[in-house]
Length: 383
Ligand code: TTP
Ligand code: MG
Image (cartoon, rainbow, N blue to C red):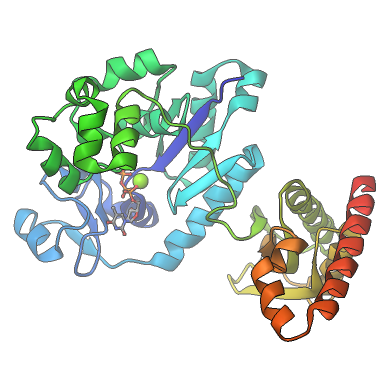
């Protein structure tokens, strides 16, 4: 089955958060950044303001703007809330920035058979929980989804169904529409008369590779035709597997919270089990209604994806938490991830240790780990 990919991107993220938290700013040009503009809302963009511009320059163009400092911790927390909402929808996701990511929605499409409905529901859900708007693009690969999410920005969505639609949409657009083509590449290609996507498509691939190098040449050529074979890589940028839930009202009920936390742990464990990773460390996060946040971690001696091993540290962690207070948020995360036992003991290590006459000791260790690994696998398949 062909993949269907959704790309989401929050609108004027940092600025929108500040406006949400201070509605008096609504309708005014709002700029976030101390020396450099990290972002500004769409009101401010009307004055020619944009990210990466100096605040000094911005103030010349828009002296009446509201200039605010960054509150990265706040944006990070909101980003985590958005990501955990998305993880409830699908685990085939790749978060590429605080406010942006890809989601494989192929299974959702099988269920609902209506892309407009999926995009609408997704945006409504994000808005309902964090009161922020986002833009969404749906495509047949990452490239088309990313380009689609820009089309009706802010607060809109667009769908590119196939390569034909892609080519039709991009043909007369500037080459900068392709993610990764920056000012420098634009300048270089400009010297060869390549300005629009159709110029790129009509250029000879060999000549393009001569200008940009083999890999970049072929990538841009393929991209101009809507070809992009990159996969969604959930773990690449997330060396942990976790989830958290924010409650709509604070809850003081030890049994209920523990039960919910256990369900959350089970869900996260399932993701670990289905992944190529073994974990050593579990962290439980709790935020109380006074916003005090605690994170408690425990580690196993060895990497594992055995349910009972990990459940035992989960239960130990629960013992350390005071459930008599009102709780607003709870989360569970596996970190300290390794792909497999054998990878820890690479050939390089073996050679090094061989020199030190430790090869027998190491072989013994490998054998024991392999035995344990296969015992774990057997037990996993029963859980
Ligand atoms: P973007 O998604 O690039 O920008 P945005 O969300 O503000 O606006 P929009 O998507 O509607 O065009 O970046 C997300 C956040 O990342 C942004 O709010 C601020 C931060 N950021 C920086 O700190 N420095 C930068 O140079 C950029 C581009 C963004
Ligand atoms: Mg954004």
